Image (cartoon, rainbow, N blue to C red; front, side, top):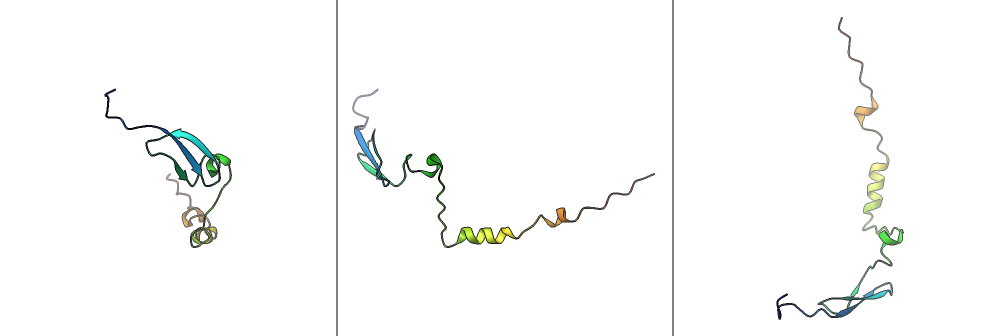
Length: 83
């Protein structure tokens, strides 16, 4: 590698909002994150559903009453056979 063109890459402490912290390396230095692997829903298996302005409820309400499409509701008449 060329000398003098690479940035410093010191150890950095990453702190999560849940209280978890770990040490890695970064050109940025120490920093804080909102979600880490210890509290992320994908890794923990818990689901956190954030409903912004009732959008999820409106979606569920809108599509919960709908049945099968109209084409599937009425079966088509069988085609006449040719002799």
